[in-house]
Length: 295
Image (cartoon, rainbow, N blue to C red; front, side, top):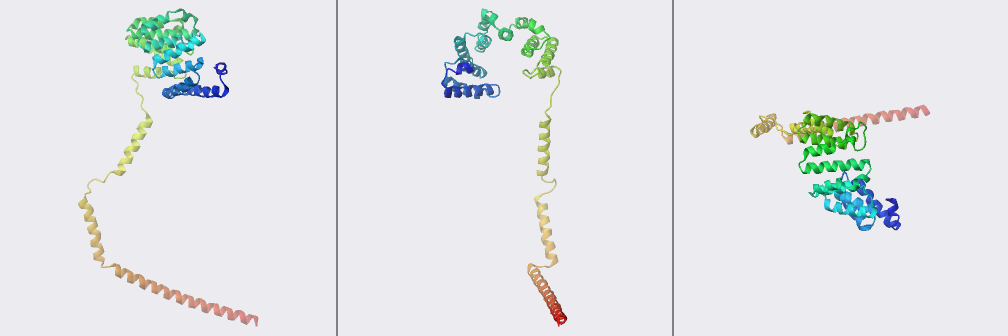
């Protein structure tokens, strides 16, 4: 891709490269976002094969199969490369033309594919057979040296998973479980949901502990908000009346309280004044004694 972008002015090449990086970064988690960046790159450099290929994969991720197929064909014309042959066949499936996908699976281009490409083409062909309700043919299509091999390759988990899924669709549950288990062994990066399918067959249910904790917190929060049972408005009024009655029985009014406070303040002032006079007398005596000492 770098060599292809070198044909562009540097500033333009940098802009295109940034958009292509975003396509690759978002295509799995945010296909729509990736599609948007691919359209920008396509507008900037539609004559660059890498741009057309990236636009094709972004459209494919958004199930825009007609648009994806057109972009893949354009990229293939520019490079003469057959690597996109399997995904082009899968676009035909997406467009409701499984027969066309099967024709492509038998084309001479398949022999030019590397091992990974040939396995991918086998997966597409098996999918096309299933689209046509030919389950037994799909199972036979997947049976291959790559499936029987004990070595784990990048495609192994997906191949075993597709085989297990086809067996299950055909009602061969025992064999399906065996191959789902083999898919789990090969699926180190979690590219399939083989473990979930296997657990489902075994009747295992997964419980999200975090959801349970959230439910508990909600229940505890509501407990404090609920009103005590057996307390009515009439009871509340009775409590208020009782408080008023207690105040009346004491016979103490606000004016009486103010008078008492005033008396207390006067008493305090008197005590303070007496203390101040005593302190003054003591100070005078100390000064006289000090003067006598000097003399």
